[in-house]
Length: 307
Ligand code: DHB
Image 1 (tube, rainbow, N blue to C red):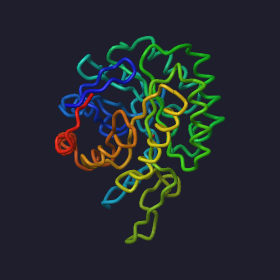
Image 2: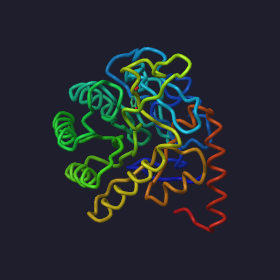
Image 3: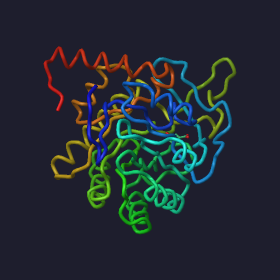
């Protein structure tokens, strides 16, 4: 096991699930909880009330290289997760907060911040869902700034470890501008997770001559191995900028991990921890042990001590 500290939380192991994967029901979350090499549980991005999300078929992962999804924030409402999935000192829970507006997010976070135990809980704010038919604030520096400004004005300081799930960015100027927004709010932010699914993907069902998923005219978020280079570049860019500017925010890697060497690459890029999405979705919770054993072999081969 490779422990890590994020905010004030101690995780027994630095590999765990990506939000939205194996975490929509309590029984799925408990399965993650009981999986030794899954170092934390991240819950499905939640809305104020239960939401049925988009129509089916809304995801597809038959191909080895990528998955496509347009789930549409199907979830049971944030109170379901907060009440029924509890972190422990041995394994914390990250509650992913989605929501449809700044007001929704402020209400959920204010409530969570009041009732969660800071020693075993965190909040991961997700303003980068690609499937809602409108652009989330995290895609654009000014919108992100306004959303965070609003949030901290309503909620004040958040009592639990707090992070943001960010979308992929592509241009150097975008990284610089987003980093400036994060720098402005850095006293509230413990970590960022890079990256969410790559928005606006398309795939076709050749047997039926139509898009492979039904919602949003077939456009959806892309995950899986094809996203690894973009995930690595996003972690690497932010880690470098944070170091240059002395910004004390950890970077958590997510995107395309399906082996121990993928995990190792994220560490080279500067990640403090990593999350597994599509590979977990396709293969189930045994992936944590498989990936961890592969990673352990790399560390031993290289003679690297974990600190
Ligand atoms: C959904 C997809 C995402 O990539 C995300 O970050 C949040 C929600 C979804 O479609 O439910």
